[in-house]
Length: 116
Image 1 (cartoon, rainbow, N blue to C red):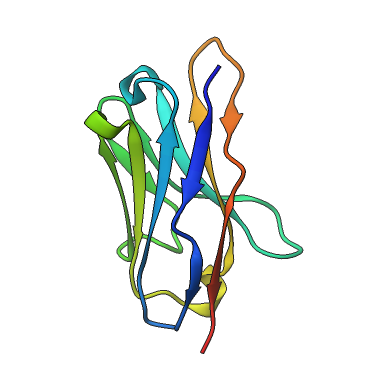
Image 2 (cartoon, rainbow, N blue to C red):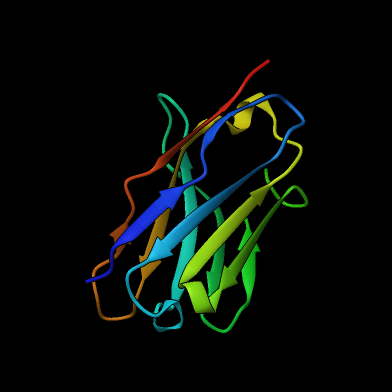
């Protein structure tokens, strides 16, 4: 079983930055894909960014060029650096772990609010 704990959310002004963390209870490299997803109020959950165990990354269209996903193997943690935040980035951000042959695991989520 994989436990994921997100942190780093909060209130930020438009144009500001936040860094989210997703700490895993297992060796992060044993997880095939770690992804960040977000769910704005009243909307469906959507992909923000993913990082594969080999290091390859992929981003949702709306965040490409502004957000960066990275990993600290020693800390078993995946980060999401969010720059140039917009009001439409406000959402609950979730971390997801995908291991082939196992159920997917989700964190509890962290709230990001972008407002002046």
